Length: 181
Image (cartoon, rainbow, N blue to C red; front, side):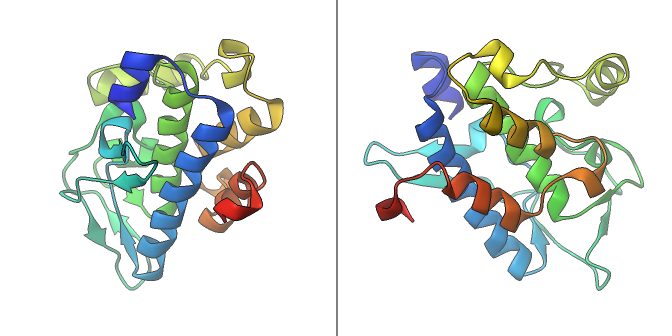
């Protein structure tokens, strides 16, 4: 995804919906196995020449505890796309943290920039204190407000305000032709 956008520019909404839908289905697979990926970002989303979408790099994948949460004991993440809780020692991550990362990756696919640019956790956390990301449809008028609102909700700072994996799949399915489902 990162290479595609860098070389070709932002993605069309339909194509971005396919990418999001396939990665959200992978997240459902993780959720069913009580796991989190931990590093969903444009560089870890492969777009093959034949149209397949694959999630890569399982180096930060973790199994959730009985309470279905994982407490961060070491911050190893990609700040520009990471959920706020993943950048804090003692932060608690779960599948909604991966939903946030997917939202950040879709934001990049639609705009060509991360929601919060920055190379370190401190830089990104400071930016989050100052402003919210520019709405996707303001940066890319070819993105519908409905799609932009979905991405915005996925990027909610509050975990409980993010949509569930099933909600993301359902919303993105609405953008796909019936034969793609």
